[in-house]
Amino acid sequence: MSPIKPVTKENMALAASLIQKGKLVAFPTETVYGLGADATNDLAVAAIYEAKGRPQFNPLIIHVAKTTDILTYVEWNDRAKRLAKIFWPGPLTFVLRRAKNSPIAQLASGGLDTIAVRCPNHPVAHELISLAGRPIAAPSANASGKLSPTHADHVYDSLGENVDMILDGGATSVGIESTVLDLTSDIPTILRPGGVTQESLSALLGEVYEACTMAHGDDGAPKSPGMLSSHYAPHLPIRLNALTASDDEAFVTFGPDLFIEGGAYRINLSPRGNLIEAAANLFSMLRIVDREPYKGIAVMPIPDEGLGAAINDRLRRAAAPRG
Ligand code: TXA
Ligand code: MG
Image (cartoon, rainbow, N blue to C red; front, side):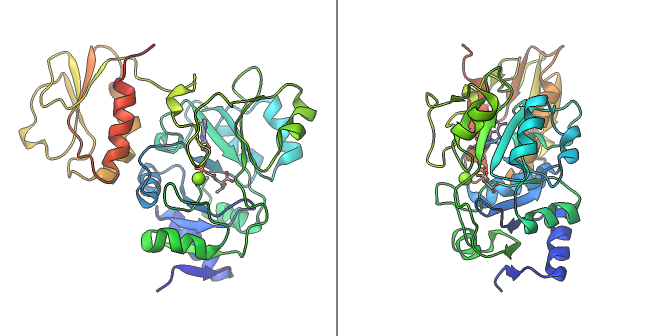
């Protein structure tokens, strides 16, 4: 049965309960359709990456329905407030520092210390966020590397049964993704051009940089979030493909604990060897072990299939020599 559903009261309530249960719901925004999940639920967020077949944990945009909602998620500042008054709801995403005790899942922000937030200008998106009572993490609802969807049918063509429900809100009006604006630096920087132009931002903010020197992938995403200065890199050295760990290392394991030996402390990404669960735990578990008294972090081999490719990509970056 097709997961495409017309926007009715019943279907909106169903969609909201699916989000609350950690399922995936595609929904219209004014830019493109988003593939939404509860942004506070690591497992639900991992399912987004799985459904899109993303080879990397590119950070996601957190969608909110009201400005008050985001006060506990990010460090809201004067510039963001001013911009929000004028451009929200609308196709402008702010990158801000993660608030202390932010409920947003580590995986949703790709392990970064910053979080991208946006208030979309679409009644269906607003109602879904409000009814679910959760912030919704949503990348464009297409398979990785494919075109962004501007129709419910495009979502189904690209993701098929990988999405639990697709709310059909007709064609989207803007058709290109939101502008991603980094507000954590002294001079605001456009990380991805989109629905709000540089001219209109400059008119309000004065100088605005465009991150044109940054390598970009097909979807306009920075190819390497590791190039961003705010990027989380573990303090401790990381050793990959470790079969055992020494007495001063923390050991991040995967799969049944039966045969695992060594390590000052052990933490398991997924005792049942499930890659979605491992992805959901990756960033939060790395943070747990990245501290004294350990001298290093040893990580067991992770199968390089499905989400394992994204996990290994991230681990290789974390283990790469630091400049
Ligand atoms: O219009 C849109 O923005 C659509 C709709 C669904 O809202 N969403 C969308 O999401 O295009 P996605 O995942 O395809 O693109 C998100 C962009 C990526 O370029 C990502 O690198 C950037 O936002 N981004 C997200 N969080 C970030 C962060 N903390 N720091 C820097 N860039 C971030
Ligand atoms: Mg995209």
